[in-house]
Length: 285
Length: 252
Ligand code: HEM
Ligand code: SF4
Ligand code: FES
Image (cartoon, rainbow over all chains, first blue to last red; front, side, top):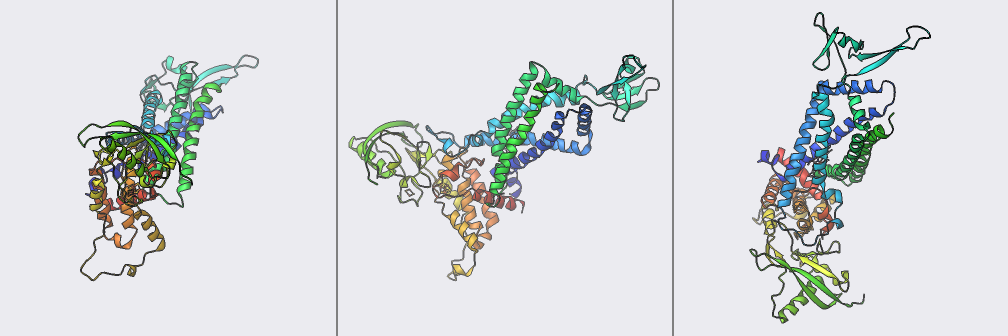
């Protein structure tokens, strides 16, 4: 009995909803801290961001966390939809007159709609960035322009260089000259002895900035992004505190604290996420 | 407060029996004293209907003092009407104005099928209660004095608050998910908080929740409508306590 109790019962569904929901809140914090680096304007902003992106896609511990995140999103979404369908069935005939707003807040009544919109956002977002980062053959690579003075009084010479993970620079022109080749998207091989000599950074920074900077599509993307964060804010406004209640963590001593923390979280986290594309589209030079 | 008379329009759910399709019927009722209770107003309507040789409106009621939980009416979109912490029998017509249109519907839940007009079958609650809402005591005659088992005041108070639930079903009726968790939470808590109830606590919560699910009640999403509409002020804390009890019971 205990086994099915922890998987199939109404309460078990609630526990899983709450656990996956709260885990996703932690994920949001991690993701946000990474994204906020896009606001940095230093000369190494792009490189630092791409280094971070490489770390996030290769570090084994982060990989484990990311699988847990994919699982949580799927489980949370499926469980949430199952719950919503069951709940609809629990009232086959509705009221002719119902005054729901006199006893509940709007967000709490619309978690499934809000969640579905978030799911649409997540899928779109992952096609735009995650899939490009992971699978796109034409993913650009991190380069820097190095200026060198050849002779006093002459205009300085500029050269495009790949930055390698190992910390060296390789001229981009070397590929065309046939001295090196790039295989498996980021691996640099010497042509003469076919030895792997370096790894390059994928330029996720460039992808992101170009995506949001585009005059027309970038503006549309920015607006949709901000809208999605608004949706997320409403989802969390009810969801954060709700998860504690689902897990049985209700104690008059801490309820106000949890509630207020949840509301602050629901406003601050999506707001900071939303600031980034707005900044890129309207203010980044 | 001086009472006065008002004229109202009623839109009432009429349904011949469980199998028939029901619909809203409109009635005009004049000279309703604002001092009368909502049920007295319905009595007045029924007299009028009987005089007109029409079928009176069937509605549940018993104690008419807020303790039996029978008077289950969904009034103007809210369980037990607009006033807070009252049952329908404790609602008075002074909550309404002259010329008001008042909707009266039965509780809506798959687990509470309509029997006739405004009467629903709430025996699902009885079956949940029978699944575990009790303590087994020896009735051999060697009964123990209740005060022989000390109960901390704080726990006694919480248990008493939970025991105030009258099983009216307003929580189910007002919940968008048709969830019975406030009721079951109160019934689980009432015993779980007391030493006498601890003995059977594990079985109780597992069995009561299983029965609740089997009856077809929905899943709580913590909207909090139940707590607002409960005539006895049963707190959401009781649902959280049930969630805890159930979690520990199911990993035992
Ligand atoms: C980053 C994304 C998301 C986060 C951080 C998040 C967070 C949460 C949290 C904390 C809860 C409260 C859980 C509880 O009351 O026990 C919740 C509830 C809910 N979520 Fe999400 N969620 C996310 C995405 C989604 C998605 C993609 C769906 C898809 C349909 C969804 C559907 C729902 C539903 C229906 C509920 C209400 C169910 C209930 O209260 O039991 N959420 N969410
Ligand atoms: S919890 Fe409140 S609303 Fe629900 S049955 Fe008990 S008294 Fe009625
Ligand atoms: S008739 Fe008993 S509570 Fe209203």
